[in-house]
Image (cartoon, rainbow, N blue to C red):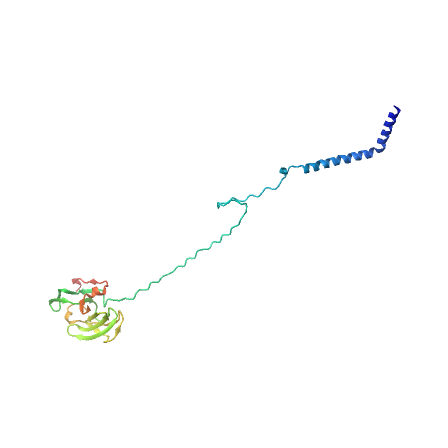
Length: 236
């Protein structure tokens, strides 16, 4: 019994003399426990609970290609189409034939049926076409050619003959000539001025034009193929 009391007394004295140290030790143990607990939580924390930044979404691909999550920047260069306007200038082909005077025919070509001659007072064939004009008006060659004859005829007045080659010949009657035999003519060149054909002097001023092909008389209007008008009898 005495020993028991003595032991308790010694333990009490130990606590009184070492109480401060014991309290400090207890505090250190408490702090250490908290740290260990915290470390344990970090060590055993589930990876699925980590707060990783959300993955950035790639815009939906509208081209139909699979999404490989790679953002590709495509630079499209648009080249403006340049249209070169080509202006084609069509030059008018040179005339092969022209009318010798006006486009009005007073009396047509007729070798199948005789026509009445106001000057001669009878019916006769008409081997040319009479183109209306005015006295002194320039007469033109109907096509390129060479002057083969210049003469004065008692029936037809001044007569100029032009050889156009390939068998085509034109003969201009009732003209005061300005050309000579051998002259080279271009289409539409002036060969003289309009005067009078004595055998047709009863008609208004006109050019009597004859044309032959291989020596055979042809209708000058048909041979030239140009547009003309035929005068009415009231025009005479």
